[in-house]
Amino acid sequence: MGPACDAAGLLFSEFNRLGVLETQFYEDDQTFAARKKLIPDPSVRDRFNAALDQAENKAQVLLARKPKDSNALFAMTLSAGLKADYAAMIEKHNLVSLHYTKVADEWAGQLLAVDPECYDAHVATGFSKYIVGSMATPVRWLVRLGGIAGDKQAGITELRLTAQHGHYLAPFAQILLAIAYVRDKNRTDARQLLVALRDEFPQNPLFAREIAHLDAGAASGIHP
Image (cartoon, rainbow, N blue to C red):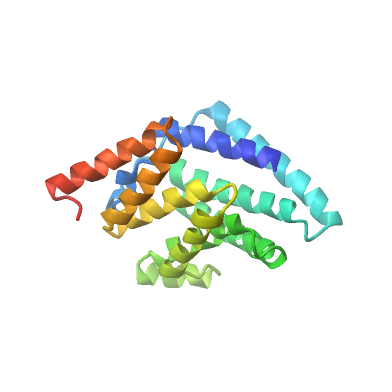
């Protein structure tokens, strides 16, 4: 879990530097599809990949002895999920990201079978369902043939589980839910989540900026 958490910290430092978590990038499919391929910091990318390799190697050694070890299963879930996030949000490799999303979903399923109260795992399963469920119908059919099922509302329900009960990933689930609400033109619930995050993390300027962005959009009539 240590190296996996190091990798998460490195990824979110890149997200912050590159402005990845700003909600205007996700307001609709056209805006998301038109996003630019970002230029990652090579040293951060190398450290990120090295941390994930270390996490996976340690987890696989442990799983060879204890196939139901929850920490090892969680580390594998996190690793695949972080790879999916890096591929989609920084490298703009959507198909690669979908592959890792499927892998994360599979590891999360194993983890939940062992520990049904590991609410953090629902980020992986919920995000997978939401993303695929949000795709256009023909694309969703093709992705389903590859073994990835989608259900937008079920995905949101799982993200809410993590947001309410998660140990490590509750804030991340809240961010994902805020983005989902923005995409659904639900400014009220998106703002409520962002206000809660701003109050919990007053030193982080992201949430205040996003609240201001939502309020400005509402005042100009861009958002409901």
